[in-house]
Image (cartoon, rainbow, N blue to C red; front, side):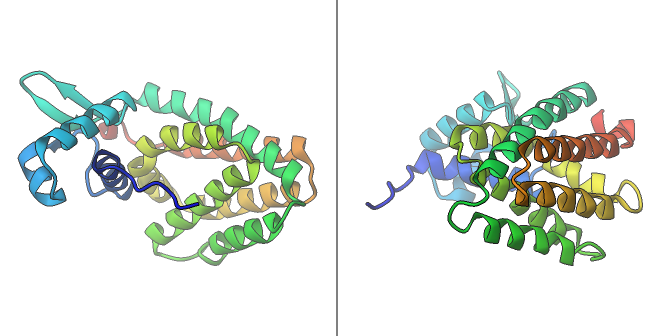
Length: 220
């Protein structure tokens, strides 16, 4: 059965999400409608509907007489997101451990984990973050719960720009991430759902701790 082709609105939503994720637009930046319609090749109607959807997801802010801007998280809001992610991604790891012996799940997880390991000492931070995203996304897919994946993706996106800086916040943070991935992988591979959840939750807490070391000007 062929997949349904995304609507123009869905395509615009996806593209703006991608730009936020990749850091092409940053927290606090204004999104100019005229520029976006020309850049994306769409009319104002679909663009405005897409922006309202993104507003509902908490990614942009629409203010009367001011326009649209990418939402800037406060420090408290960002820490709240980490707390929720810890619970949800911990659950994803638990479920992935329960399904690890199905189909080619172990092979897929091994490939994703090895990709981050190879980049542990790389200076290409962007490449590491993309490999890190694939590792986390693979665990979500192996959980077998698409709704859980949607929730996690929505929570993770606003922090992408912060995460790039977070890796640079202190020496050894990438190595810590790789070690955390190994612990998560080992637990899931063994089918130990409780240990997998604990390892993932510990990993998210390590990310939150690195985030806390960011300077306050990042949130002004």
